[in-house]
Amino acid sequence: MLKQKSRKQKMTPYLMLLPTFVFFSAFVYYPFCRAIYLSFCMTNAVGHPMKFVGLGNYEWLFKSKQFWNSIQVSFKFALLIGVCTFTVAFILALMANVKMRGSRIYETLYSLPMAVSSAPAAAIWFLIFSSGSGILNYMLHTDVRWLQDRSIAMYSVALVTVWMNIGANFIFLLTGLRNVPKDLLESATLDGAGYFNKLRHVVLPMASPQIFFVVFLNITTSFQTFAQIKLLTQGGPAYSTDILVYNIYRTAFRDNRFDRACALSVILFLIIFLITRVQFMLEKKGVHYS
Amino acid sequence: MKLQKKKELIFFILKVLVGVIIISPILYACMVSFMGPEEVSSYPPRVFPKEFKLINYDAVLSTYPLFKFLANSIIVCLIVITSQVIFSSLAAYALVFLDFPFKRLLFTFIQITMMIPVESIIITNYITVCDLGLVNTYPALVMPYLISGMSIFLMRQYYMTIPVELKQAAEIDGCSDWGFIYHIAMPISVPTIASLGVYTFVRTYNQYMWPLFVTNSMNMRTVQVGISMLIDGEAINYGIVTAGAVFVLVPVILVFVFGHKYLVNGMTSGAVKG
Image (cartoon, rainbow over all chains, first blue to last red):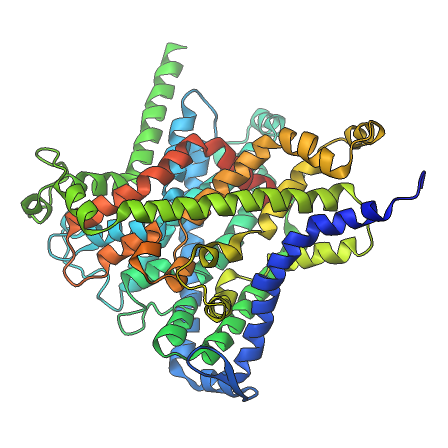
């Protein structure tokens, strides 16, 4: 307004955004469009389209038993992870809520499994789960084949995943709890509210944005679980842990069907997209933001 | 008063104990990694080694190029962190301080990238890398992660707290936009950059799926994929496996413990509305 911007200045913002959009174009927008396109094609061994088949891949998937099994396993897994991780992390956050000298120690301990990635986690839990001389069986006085029994493997993998996810949940929930204004809690105490009353009527509503965020975070991340499955069970036994992402991997690299893998990828995107839409809708309705 | 103190101390000890239980799988693996072969497979299982032996570490280091894996991971992390810091600072600056046509549209396109799960584009990204003949190269390992919507958001969140007056004063002094980023915006955002750095390090170091797809030579493996080879075999040697796992965990746990404050900051400032 004061002075005309030079042409060079006008270009500045675009230059600043250029690297971002170059990389996004090459590794987000383009592969996304390509996945949609390939899902309508038949591909060769290196993933190049051979001919257009329309909805053929989707029809094949919808008729396949393994696809519906994967969907079922994924949702069951998401529910398990969502409920368990949140519950454990919330209890931990309540315990760590009050800041005191040395509280950094247990705050760090509670969130530490977050730093453990799936490969060492799988190694560690393999040892714990091992049948025969495994420590878990020894402590529980049982003889369970944690990763080989088809009715149990899913819960074992879920246990490992919950353990890995507690840390991040704990950090978000602790922030939420510590954001609850002190004077609100004090006035509730003066009104004679007990611990659980305060929790229900003050803490939960005030921390609802974080609670809400964490619950949906768990659901979406559980849909994206891959490494634990690949390393602990390979989707088995009898496809009991064959979650969608593992199915994508299997279809692409073992069956060499990149077209079907792309169709599965599109479906994965749609599911996660719908879940986040639900999240936004619910968020507008009921969550309390101070 | 004294009773209160005592109660607090007991609670403190209890809370730390719960923490120890949570990390007990790591501690247990650590113990096993120091045991000799007959102790590892003894029944009932031993928790503490009779004496601390290093044979498992010797064995794993002589069979697998763990230091090469570690070097690969560190190189990948450094490239990804550097590029994310620079490019997200630039993008965030343009979005916060500058006005230009199509700004809202471009911002929407950045937001879209955060709604696309990596797993749904990983197959096509893999095909792209194959087409370019980049399998088993560093470019392949880093390329999809040189920028992320999340890091742009984090930097943007911070830049929005820089007073406009600061920018105006710099402008009057003849400071260009590039000068402002380099001399003012980036230096004062060092804590945020640290958050982004720690967060990106933990995420990149722990990546498994992408490095698994785009590397297949021993020389290009990153730590996660490298270590997973230890548990791929039929007969698992738990002493060696846990030694490998501990080796991989040490760097990331060090970064985690010393960068905890920054990590928490990075995670919580961008994620939930605020």
